[in-house]
Image (cartoon, rainbow, N blue to C red; front, top):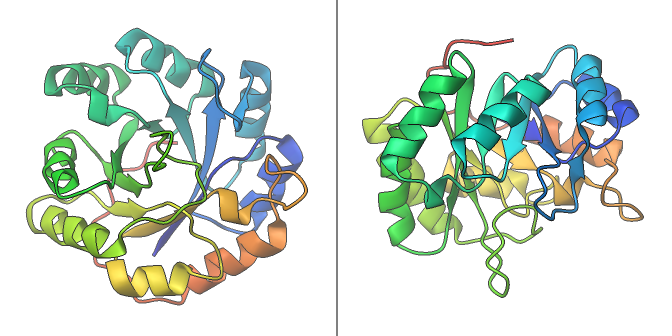
Length: 234
């Protein structure tokens, strides 16, 4: 079971989380789009330098290929994560994929209804990883909401994607040590992602290392879906 810890905003947290052994560590670069978990370019570079074992994931909220490529150049991640891939057509995604190669591509699928299944199968054609996440019911913001979504629908998406494509599917959205075992049992994803529920209660921009450690341990104790792993880029 792949594990991904998102929302790392300090060098100290990056190094500490990395020592706990997740497969991926995710950061969000400031791109002029309002978000509570972003870091500036200097901090992103310092975090990248502190991550020695995990694969670094750099999230972009942009749908502009030039901005996405610039983010990838500034963060230098192994995996570029497009949080708004659902707003991009196939031509744009193919362009971004070609320009980012050999870096891998993670694409978010907002789980909002049956239409999400069709979206997931469309995006899987361009993805090395998919990430199923929650769309906030009031604001429409996708990701970093701390809210779970319909796991039955996510399970159906995982089944459909795995039948046709080889890209692992991460489950995100309100996952923490208290519910990740149940989520894995119901959805059977290739990986699990946590941000809000492994953050500190007094400062959501900092990670609670005890929660991170328990999240990873519980996820790793569950049966692993037999996804092939895409080629590595470090």
